Image (cartoon, rainbow, N blue to C red; front, side, top):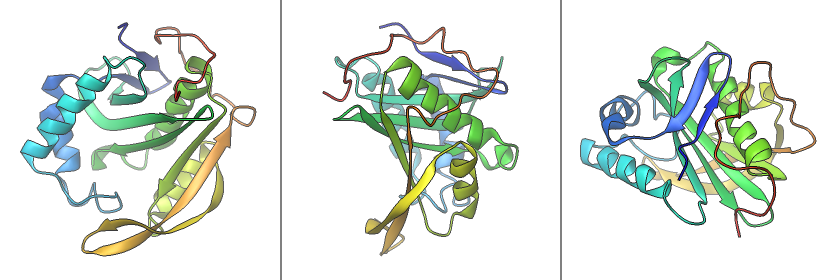
Length: 198
């Protein structure tokens, strides 16, 4: 396996490493950082398991899941966690979480662009979609700024904090995506084409 690395103006996406567990715990274990996510704050043991699964998924053949560390460009420390999971029909779902200290600086929008670069430029996908909590207006702005279109609502999509919660969905098609300046997919592992979702 060739490790995947994508570079943007401010951020990079790289493969998750076992040593990332502590930095990921600072996000996934934080009630504020996970307030709008589809799960409650994770324990250290749960985060260590997520980190291990992320490392393992990079070695799957075919690879259908890309669990990546978000870092500032030129730095190694994880400040966020991004995921792209392929589906049939040349599609994928994406999601991400950033440490609260990284909020409000446009880094979420750049993370979505990097995930789109992975999906469209590297994997040759046709459609990418994402979902957000109805109360997460910051996520709505992020997804729209990245060029996605609001599709609709999935009722009672996730069970979290003891109750069912809807999700608002967004999508973008390959011909709709306009890359931002400074994106570099040259270090990514494979070329366009095929249906990675099988």
